[in-house]
Amino acid sequence: MLPKKSLATRIALTSGAIFTVISVLVMCAVWTSLSSVASSSITVEPPDAASSSPQVVEAVFRLTSGATATIMTVTGAALALITVLGTFITYRAARSSLRRVAEITEHTRRITASTMDERLALRGPDDEIKDLADTIDITLGQLSDAFAQQERFAANASHELRTPLAVVRTSLESIGADDPGNEAVERSLRNVTRMDEMIGSLLLLSQTRQLSEEVRSPVDLSEVVRIVVEELAPAFRSREVLTTTIADDEAIIDGDQTLITQAVHNLVQNAARYTPSGGRASFTVTMSPHGVVARFTNDGPIFTDDEVSQFTEPFSRGAHTRVAGTAGHGLGLSIVASIARQHGGSFEVESRREGGFIGILRLPPVTQEAGDAPPGLHSAHSARTIT
Image 1 (cartoon, helix red, strand yellow):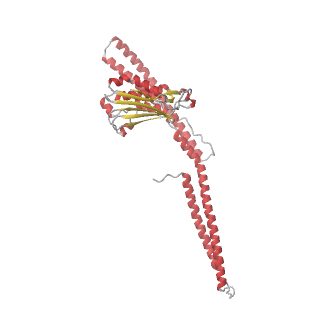
Image 2: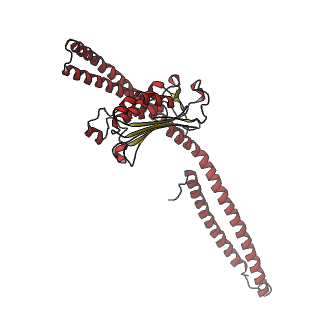
Image 3: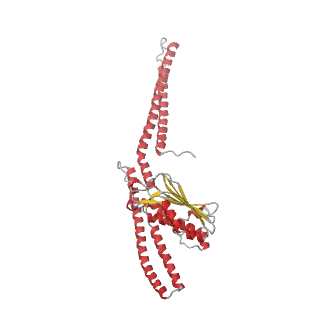
């Protein structure tokens, strides 16, 4: 596959081709004119014995031929120089003009749903390129308003739905107190609790904007993973699932402690819920200058790449889990992906050849402005293993 040429290069090549064609045409015109002059210069009218002798004719022919060659050489060199300089100047001019387009492309590529408040605010002459940047800013503003409206709707809907659920819960608890052991009441309470949890999950999932600096603080992801794994250890032991946690002593990120804990809890709980009895689950956290990478691996059925790619979609749990009747509403991994985006990171799921899958959470490292970070923030640490 041929390498992609920049627009400035293509403009310069086109300009060079045009200059070359013009130069060839000019050379042909000059050659034709000089040949005509040379032919007429050796014809003497009227004929004269002294001036039309073979020696004189030959001398004149040599003189005109030499002059023609000199003129053609000088003209060709001049045209070649003009072609080279014209192509170079065209390239520099095109590259200078298109540099602003490259800035627009780079900045626009960085803008995501969580950073929709950013604007290009391109400076420079009021030309077509600035019109393009202003149009993109207007579009981003409209998209930002749409996302904000979506979040307000989700928040309002959550409040309106939770209020009657709270009333229903209170009524059911009162009935259950008067009639202990009523299976219908207990089942209704479980459903109300599940609906309340789902509403909370949907509200969290609807948050698309990147976290503001006011709510950010240094968070040790390694410590969060260790604590969550310890809290869910009974769930693993009840199914005889062997767990292994390998984490750097400190893996500091810049984020919200509650949201990060929620994301880790969803991932570890997912492993505790879907790992088959007698299987294995492992959790690793590593720190690098580019950020923190947490891997959550568990055994399970063999999934195709297409199936795994749908796991981060809301209400997607996979055919295997539905057949098994496993609890859950299919929002856990979607929430993890949403929290990762809010923190400027990413979350992806990969299938394993031997079965199960790997959830990979990537988060940027803590910044200097994030507050007081623990010492040794960017240095390597020995690994700690919990089994």
